[in-house]
Image 1: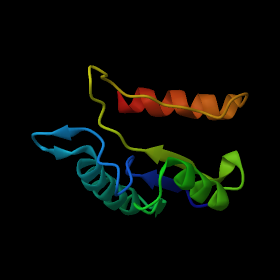
Image 2: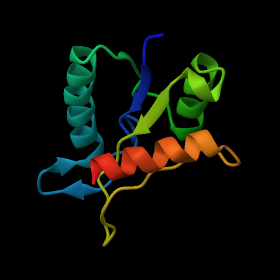
Image 3: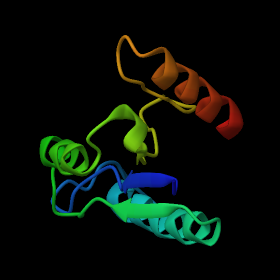
Image 4: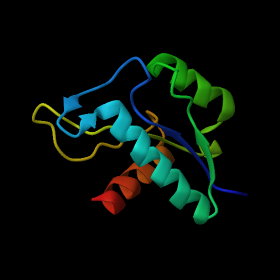
Length: 111
């Protein structure tokens, strides 16, 4: 079974996120997303990019329409934290030991 990953650039086209001297978060997240997709495809993952025009609610619906079970894949939402927030966050499906274990492995590998 091919490994599937859904990637969201974090902010939709009309939500810039944090504005920085380096650009807005939305643009930076899309650049990160595009590089990440390239690398994941190179490593033989099946990757789906959430359309940039979708807001948070619609992007979650988009992924849920394509991932019918918890075993359907991994969903990643990219953000560059601001306003004093630092580090990485990993969320998992409530009451799912398997989902929690995967979230812990993901965050530990990232850190």
